[in-house]
Length: 188
Image 1 (cartoon, rainbow, N blue to C red):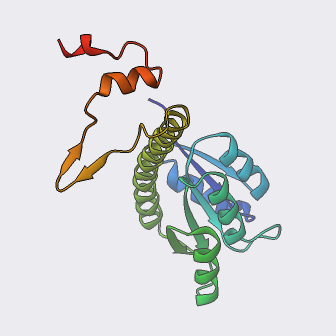
Image 2: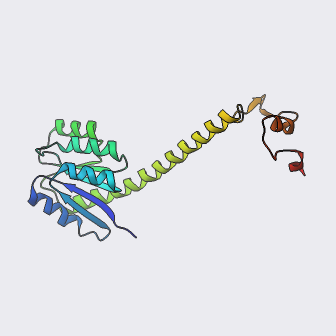
Image 3: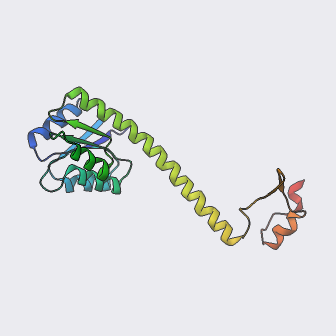
């Protein structure tokens, strides 16, 4: 079974090493680190990143900007921000731009970080399932539209006084619509 991909971004090399060291204690994780938020976005775009852990204050872009872009690229990637600034502005920015799953203060406790990431991995699994449901619904709707365009009225059912209205002669209507193979022989 493949490992769960966790991407960590921070402009402080020692903080990044500390985050990675903490998360690598979990055997089911593949932990990738980078000082470059653009490299992290490349990974998010190319691979199924389950969790993105980012510093808030970075020179190239804020963690909120990074997580906002990551959300647009891969919505099911769960986003965690680490910050040394404990202000409402940081929280609002993170929520508005990146729909942050958790905010963690720096310096962080290993146990708190590992718990937050474990919960984020579970949320990623839930989001992937929902994404699959959404894809199936979209595909079902595409098929319905295609059938409806080829056979107008096929997807609508009339209902009158608590019962369904069925045509008196569905076989003739099927033949008129050009639906080969739908004839009275199917009743037997």
